[in-house]
Length: 215
Ligand code: ADP
Ligand code: NI
Image (tube, rainbow, N blue to C red):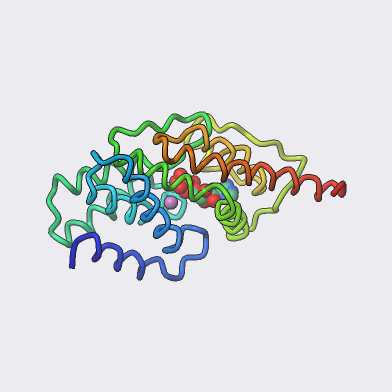
């Protein structure tokens, strides 16, 4: 079995019962999307792209007491257990470190084409129909209200402030989701993002109209 196939099997098992929107189905979509985006980025290393996509949420800080190194560390442990070359492991670790959104006012530059592909793929899964579903699933998992007009959205200027946020779920659209379209690195992702963004904007407008009882 190839390292990519073994990793897919390992992650599929590990995340089978996850219920917060960071499940195997999410990881699988990111893996497939990264490969789709890679078609127009032939210089990207296939193994680095696919392994990083598969391992990008292996130990998310949100579920590890805010420990931002938990993900890269868990990925390294897995790849070492499979006797992967150290150079490959280091490249995957770097991608995982760079993928995550850290607050509206916090830049998240990428240092490789592979990181650009995986970050774009992960962010495409945060918008559109599935993105909406994942946001409310996450909010429900955390016991948050759907919406509260009295709580204004915040443009988090630091990762710490973003991490501590406990706002109603609709605020997440203003604090992250509606900004992702303009933060894509690849042309292919930007195109896919257009339609998903438009759908999400229409959805939010409709949500607010129904909330106010005008629809
Ligand atoms: P990234 O995938 O860039 O690391 P996160 O892990 O912070 O981003 O978020 C992944 C997904 O989890 C989001 O796209 C969203 O669907 C959901 N999520 C995260 N934080 C929130 C939140 N505060 N409210 C609602 N959904 C959230
Ligand atoms: Ni993800």
